[in-house]
Length: 376
Image 1 (tube, rainbow, N blue to C red):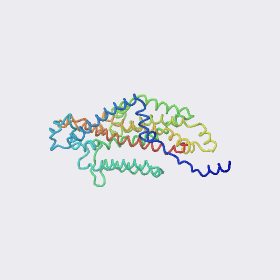
Image 2 (image 1 turned 120 degrees about the vertical axis):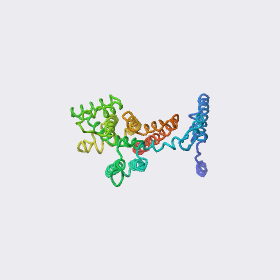
Image 3 (image 1 turned 45 degrees about the vertical axis):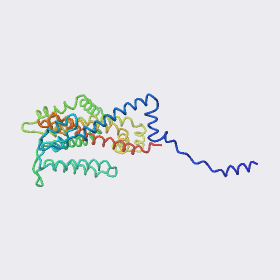
Image 4 (image 1 turned 60 degrees about the horizontal axis):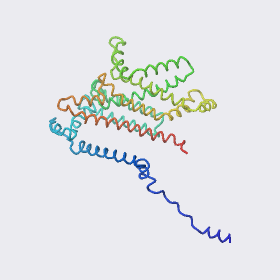
């Protein structure tokens, strides 16, 4: 009897696995769990959705439907008639070259435009892990040298353009790129110095970090612009952009050093002991075992600091350097375009957002890729 029962049971096909209900997974499941989990949550969701939809419709009407996109010969009456109803994007149409390139000679605008493209290409190549080789440093040196030649000119038939004529987006990229490129190695050296067993080196690094972090960036820019020339020999002058660049490098290096030091301290002690057990020298241990793991741990705060300093380059306006934001402000000083600052600030903000959002998304993907081994 038992054999018959077992044979019958063996012939019964197994039930196929069923998928989860649509109301429990996917977008519907997420909305049900997070937006409509109770009557209070549902009420708040509906109220917020009403205001968001109403604002979105009004913004679309203002920014696109009723907007003025161009005006003939700076005749801004059409924009003034549409004020409060539609945006005046004609100010961007007329002033976009000044916003992007400042007072750079009009007929030479192709040079800063090419520099912006070179910066973006350099960022893209540097973000690809297959290019993470020692030769990438040579690529950086070559591209940055080419950017300098394009901006200054004076060679290959390009007329010389003094630094005082530079401005706009390219100045923001120069300050941010050179600043972070030099500040990051400085930060690593300072972070290692703060953990050094040599009292003199440790004291110097601690004094540098605490002194720089104890003052705002504006004060460093003022010192670089006003006080630093007073200590130079008579007749010697250092370019204003270079002075601002050095101040930004020193300021960013101090903050990044603390981030890197946090990664060094968070690394388990066993990693140091394992490296010592292998008989590695201090520099081999630091370069191949300690630093890679420490930097991987602090990718989010590192990128957060990068984003902050990219936006802080706008503070150079106080010493008369025409960065992107300053060029935007100056573009609407002309009486014909006064009163249309919202459109200019939205455009400038969109440019900042594109670069900052790209850094944020890249850091998330890089962190996920480097920590893939931690996923179980």
